[in-house]
Image (cartoon, rainbow, N blue to C red; front, side, top):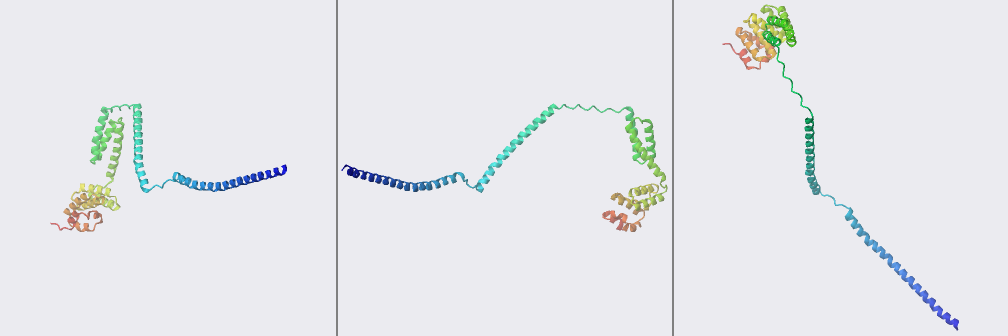
Length: 280
């Protein structure tokens, strides 16, 4: 009896324990099933919120054209002010450095006053001026004599003596050429025509002027001088010489109408008046 009772008593305990364990396992299974979708829902609901927060915090709004222009407009005067401040500071520094350097540099001594010329130097200068006037007038023989006297008396004045030797050499060379030149007016005229045809207009002018000194009323010499001065570009002097030649010999108008040496004068109205107008 005791054993059956004990068996009967034990059985329900094991069944109830099994039921309890099965109930616990079922609850755990239910909890596990219910906990998994909750975790998924929580994760699904939390991730978009985090994305939204990240997108707001990390992504920056694209700048518009107006904002860029306003930023540049604000930055330009600021940059100009900064550059102006730098320039003023640099200028102040440079002026300070220059002032410091000038203060350090010693002032140069004043140059000594020029030495007054001695009695020999002043006398040599006055003698040179007299000889040079004769040289400029074309009186080479007189100029040569005065330069020789100057060198004999004031050779110790080096500067004046050197200049006198130069002019003395020129005067002597001019006198030698004059001695070689022909003496009569016709020979000088022929020599001037040769120089004119060669293109040596300065030499031709000198020959014609020398010939006029010996024969001032020669129309053909005045005409040659007019042609030479026209080639040299002295229009007014050429017209004067041509006027003088036509006054002395009017039939030279025919020659002047076709003379190529007078081409520089053809654009001048006075030339037309002289050549194509009938004499009174």
